[in-house]
Length: 179
Image 1 (spheres, rainbow, N blue to C red):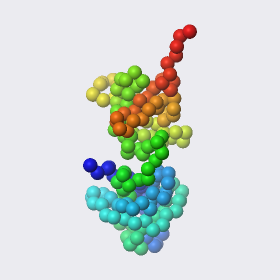
Image 2 (spheres, one colour):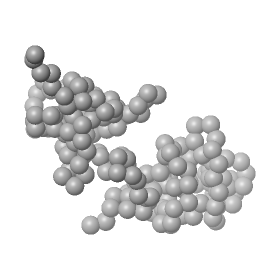
Image 3 (tube, rainbow, N blue to C red):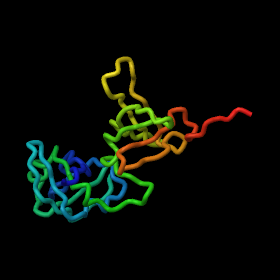
Image 4 (tube, one colour):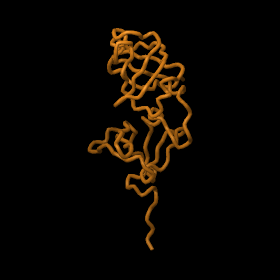
């Protein structure tokens, strides 16, 4: 099975007259724009291979220059397209780091083994990320659970088992013992 497409950024506007584009992206390492097997996915769903010649950071995103895109008209035609690659093409992370696409959809359990739902979204905040956990099984009255991605709340992530263990109380999985 092929790994999923991962969005590295979205072309939001043409930049200048020489075919550069402004890209909105939340990637940490802009070197990922230089990965082989990068594609441009357009609104109609078509994907075409893409080579980034240069990039530079600019307020709120990046300015990229693509091979074969040399005019403002060519750049404007790319507005709304996404830069994508297969997840398997991304650099390998250390053992305690994960790409969002690896986590979204995983089952989330509390420390006692009760399933709380599925990880449906990862929100960015100034302090840290927030996991949004949606209850499963159509249980009415259950609201989504928001957990900060810090050690007190996130106990274990097991990609092979397809699950995340959390402590919604924020005790880091520790239970208090009575004296």
